[in-house]
Length: 94
Image 1 (tube, rainbow, N blue to C red):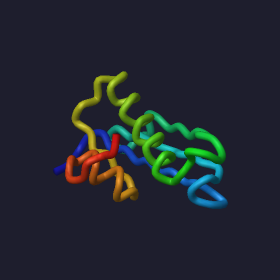
Image 2 (image 1 turned 60 degrees about the vertical axis):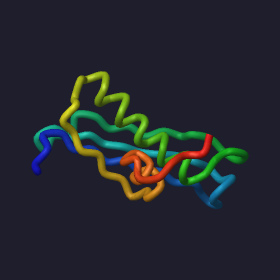
Image 3 (image 1 turned 135 degrees about the vertical axis):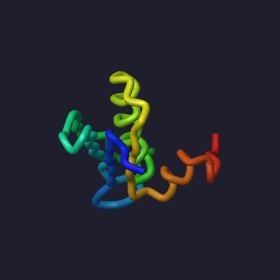
Image 4 (image 1 turned 180 degrees about the vertical axis):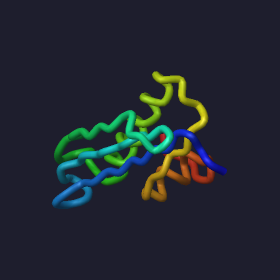
């Protein structure tokens, strides 16, 4: 299946995970042209992890897609946790 809109997200927590500096990045393309890119710093220390950073990345993608009413999109990410939870294969702790 070919999607008109493709997007990618990633996150990192360095120099240690957890408790390091967490940040993320994302990009959205429509018909191969970049229509949105964003990166951000989440924070440092308590509560910071790769998983938190990855989720911040996908949240930015989803916010943009919703704002632009782009519903026929595919989102790529390398976080097994985020991908499995977003596809409802794994649950989340509350």
